[in-house]
Image (tube, rainbow, N blue to C red):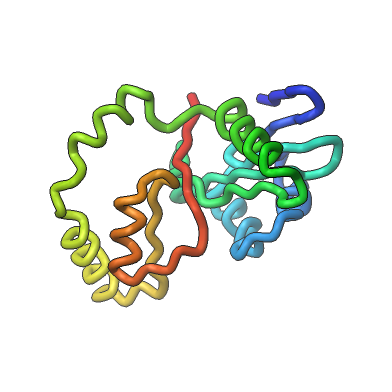
Amino acid sequence: MTVEQNDLTIRPITGREELDLFSRLPYVLNEELADDLAAGRRRPRWMWVALRGDRLLARAAWWGQSGDDTPVLLDVFDIDDSSTDRERVDIGLTLVLDGTLDAHSRDDLARMPAHRGNGYIDEILAEGTRILSAEDVPRIRAATDLGNTPMANAFQRAGYVNFERVINMTWD
């Protein structure tokens, strides 16, 4: 699927041969992308670019377990800093909303707040971290939707370092 809006083209990469294009924006884990593709943790159809001509303006990539048909999380979402604030917002929204579909319907999002605010997250997060630590996991990462401030605050209270942002997306 390719979306063209004005002079902006949004599309998934065609394959491994476009990793250089996808990696034009700096990312702390760019060097892992080729291995993830080879291992099936990423698929070209899960790696999207927003282009104006041959200039990369933004990118998004999802990660999944090897063998899964759908990705687990969006862990790359970058927008080129050289555009104005308004242009970056427009490009990001177009990439997210037109290039892919929202992970949750509006009805699902409307129901979620009813389950929040009970104060359980600190205990759940501490227990999950303890279990992973006891298994000698070399690196523990956690993620939440960009707008989920309570969860982001829980990660901060637990000592997690914020090194990127995540928006969960899916498509049919």
